[in-house]
Image 1: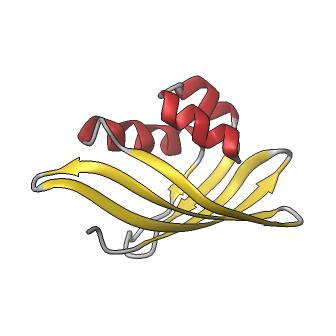
Image 2 (image 1 turned 135 degrees about the vertical axis):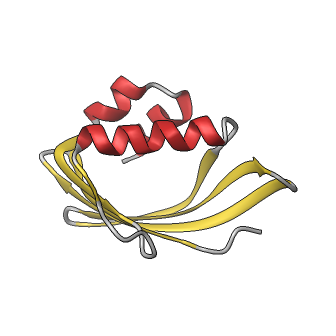
Amino acid sequence: MTAALDALRARDWDAFARRLHPDVVHRTPGVPEPILGREAFVLLSRQAVARTPDVTFEVERLVTEGDTVVVIGEWTYTGLTGKVRQPSVSVVDVRDGQIWRDLEYVGLAI
């Protein structure tokens, strides 16, 4: 799990892709359709970084039970009015050592 976050921080898209299961599903409440598949998830991540090039994620806590990891942390980036902090909780299921399901809940940006 931390290897995927490290690859995202480094903008190493190949390394990030290797951490994702080919059939990965990413869901965020409020977004009508899930992001399906490795290529789509990498594209979504690349587009997010293109919009906010200084975006980063800091892990506050990881909780692991079996093949499920809960990641609690905060996204930070520069928005139109300055620095933005946005809390996040993701429930991640791992299959074959890769991220298979990712359900991310993001809080209000402050």
